[in-house]
Length: 64
Ligand code: SF4
Image (tube, rainbow, N blue to C red; front, side, top):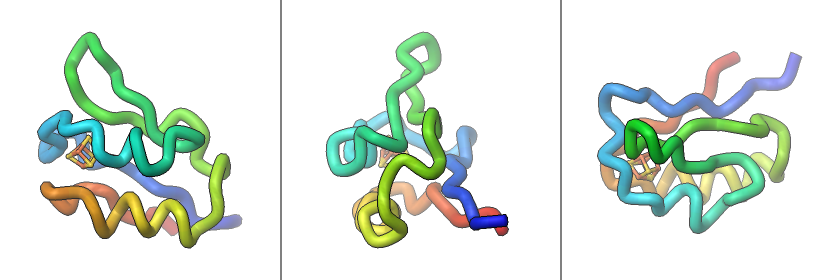
């Protein structure tokens, strides 16, 4: 199975950077002001990694 991106909820600071870079995969859960993965395979790995690299809390990671 392909690896999927996961947001570590405890560490997310709700900055919305990942949702702006890769809205196909990440969206805000406004109830808790944190990002969630709504479509793990919605974008290329490259684009997902761009969001990971831009996350100021470094809380997006690959789950095998
Ligand atoms: S970029 Fe990181 S800290 Fe910002 S909303 Fe996304 S997961 Fe949370």
